[in-house]
Amino acid sequence: MEAAERRRVRLPEGIGAVVQEAVLVGGVVAAIGGATAFLLFAAGFPIGRGLAAMWTGAFGSWYAFTSATLVRAVPLLLTGCAVALAFRGGVLNIGGEGQLLFGATAAAAVALVMPAAGVAASIGVAASLVAAAAGGALLAAVAAFLRVRYGVLEVISTIMLNFVALHVVSYLVRGPLQESTHLYPQSATIGDSLHLPHIPGAGRLHLGFVLALLISIAAGWMLRHTAAGFRLVATGESPSAAQSAGGIDVGGTTTRVFLLSGALAGLAGGVEVLGVTFALYENISPGYGYTAIAVALLARLDPWRVVMTAVLFGALQAGAGAMQRDAGVPSTLVSVIEAALILAAVAVQSIRLRRQTAGVDAYAQPVGA
Image (tube, rainbow, N blue to C red; front, side, top):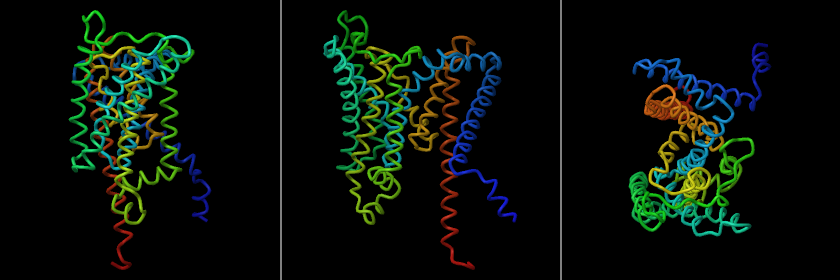
C-alpha cells in the first residue's frame, strides 16, 4: 500500500526533468547572487546598489535583456555548443577563442570584397558566414592533424593556436586589412547591406541569435537521435570499446568532431562581425572562447542546456558592465564569479562521476561479498 502511494505521487519523467532543471537554474542564480553580495561586501562596495545595477543591466528592461544579455549570449551559445560537442567526443578543444578569431577574420575579409547591393548582398552575408565556419574549421584542422599524425595533445596545440590567431589578427588589421586612412588598427567598416538583420522589436538583437538557437537544437537532437551522435558519444566515452565492439572509425570520428567544433566557433566570430562590430579589430572578443568552456561544463555538455547557461553568462557580462558604469564596481568582480562557477561545475561533475563509478563497483561485487 505504501509503495502504491509512492508511485501515485511520483512526477512523470518529463515533468520531473523540468523540475530538476528549474531547481538547478534557481540554485545557480541564488549562488551567483550570494557570491556577488559577499564579494561586494568584502570589497567595501554597497551591496544593494551593486546588485540593483547588475540586475538592471541584464534584465531591467526588454531592451536591456535583448540588446545586452542576448546579444552577448549569441557567441557564447555557438562556442558553448562547439566545446560541448568536442568534449562529448573526447576532444579537449581549448582553442575556441582562436577559432572564433579566425572565423571573424574570414568573415570580414569576404564581406569587404562582396558587392553590397541587391541580391548580391544576401549572397555576401551567406558567403561570409560560410567563410567564418571554414576559417574556424581550418584552425581546428591544424590541431586535429597534430593529434592524429604526431600524437600532440590537443590541449596544448589548441591553446598555442589561440595565440597564433591573436597575432594573425593583429598583423592583418595593421597590414592587408587595415582601413584606408591607416590611422586605426582595424579593418574598414562592413557595408550596411551586409549586416545581419535585426529582429523586429528586439533592439540590437540580430538574426544570429535565431541561427545559434537552431544550431543548438540541431546539435542536441543529433546527439540523442542519430547514428553520428552515437558514434561521437561512444568515441568520447571509450575509444577502445567504440573501435573494438562498435566497429567505429575512432580516428575519423575524432577528426570530424574537431572540424565541427572549430566550424561552430568560427561561425560565432562571423556572427559577431556581421551582427555587432561590423569591422575586424584587435580584442574583438572579450574571451568568449574561454568563457564557452564554463558555459559547456555548467550545461553538462548538453547543447540544449547550453542555451540556458549561455544566457546566464551573457547576463553576467551585461550586468558587469552596468555595475561598473552605474555603481563604480570593477567588472573584474564578475570574472571571479565566473571562475567560481567553473570550479563548482567541475566539482559537481567529479562528484557525479565518482558516484556513478561507486555504483558500478557495488553492482559488480558478488553477492555476499
